[in-house]
Image (tube, rainbow, N blue to C red; front, side, top):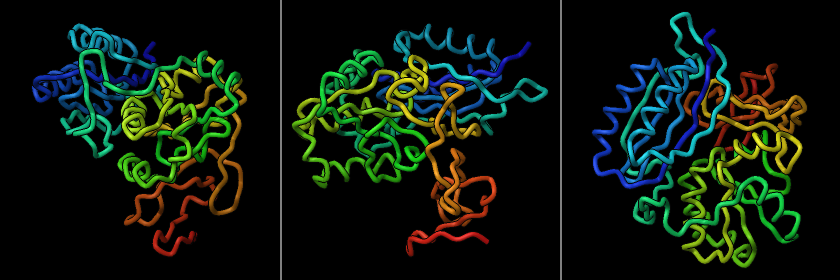
Length: 300
């Protein structure tokens, strides 16, 4: 029986010819009937792909045969469904591209990468180590490394959530001094699968934060280990047609509809096609639009 699976992965490692790897990765995905998105740069690979479990396994096995990707950081999750031809429905297409960065912070000149990974990043913490540190340190700061809208349906309890619309906004926020008061505190950065925090933690270290950590494997790995019985609260936003994933049968719904205040974990694009905002909206109000300049919400 065919089973839809989604693979989330990354590796920071020097790549001499990202364009050649792009061609190979596209051919490998097409040969295994996979869809999703893969970004490559001279600093590594970052991707999410899905398909039938057998095709995904073949893809991963072949990718790890390439020496630079031998230690690829990988997380598995359930896909929604497969079409009649075995193509996963969670992604509209396959996209494999070369960019200046595999995570778009807009600071490629600040990142240093060797075969061992990112240079100068935060100390990696396993989910168990995060819980231990949180129990031992009452001054611990959990710092959300995602776009602010993602945190509206799920976040770590008590976390600092910077008001950023895109990953590129983090550099400006850090340089503004808005979080300088945290520089002498233990700060744990976290994100979906860990890749954004590899870069974010290094940016924070470079700006004088004295004790910086990153959650190894991100929220996904923490949820795999502790479900909804740890420090995490709510649903995890994902950038595909699933919209979000839960880690147990008792996931709390912490999002509230911007139109009526009802509890929901659903997110939709603003109904105004000129607006790129993501809004927490229940099923009864999927026509909500926002006037970004006026800061208002409305529904037809």
